[in-house]
Image 1 (cartoon, one colour):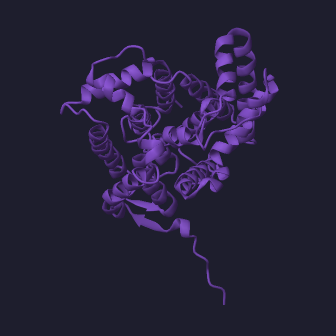
Image 2: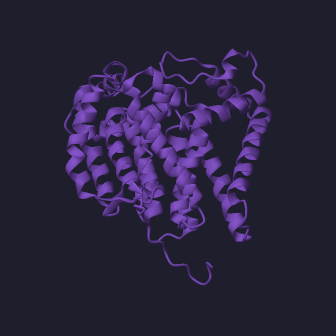
Image 3: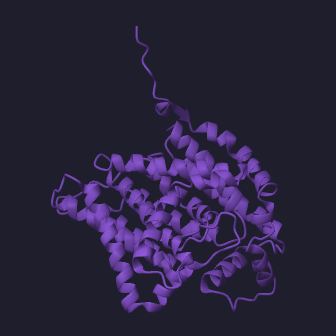
Length: 369
């Protein structure tokens, strides 16, 4: 007699368990941050330089993203906080409340993968992101995308347009290279939209992948011809070697003038390394949570892509937004530590991608059909 095997990934977990675990996970994360990760994350945190500027009301001689971040936290400082630790406690309280509200709106029942991702997101965010830095501000933009995708009033086309516009807004206000996220999102969603409009049912994923590769090569060629300073910045980033143990070393580091093909190969390799960071295993136990977290996200996205035709359109927008985010990041991320800080704040959108948040979409009118 055969015993039927049960798929453990289908086991449902009541979301109330996460409510109970929430404060415990925050405490565990902060202990890790102030013990194993203290030297790299706390002692060398960029927020120490922000404190002096906030206390002295100095907003000049910094890049625009940092100036706006400093001004934002200065406006938020209604209790006249003056130390790094005070700001971290304050920021941790506010952003954990925001995160709790997002989790509160997730589905009542979560499968093992969804629940594990939510739990790890709480831990990772409290280790790397909920402190005096640009990441909490950046997360607000991603929450805006999350709210747009969740909207019951907006049509799919408007959800995609507003997602694109927020990527552009981040590029203008916070990080210039987010223009790449906007570019790749436009390529991916545009390709998907056209394939669906013309009812191309076979090889959609392969065709979209080919469009991404062609657009990437075109981007490199056109930037080298018409935007030489930006192209030089890209080469400079890839040739820069940081002091971080998790630095992303590439082939072009050893090249005086790396060819475009070398840069393209570097880019593909970095992209693969970002989503499969197995190389961090020899660096110690403190990297295990990050490796597990990243592999879990990779699993979620691959699984979601496999059901692309069955997903609702809102979920697909979240998947395309994440892929665009990784494609853009692969060009400029200097090390894995920086990558996880930037990626973790993207988690609200991944909640949709993994279907932990089910979206009820606006019913199309006859004209929209």
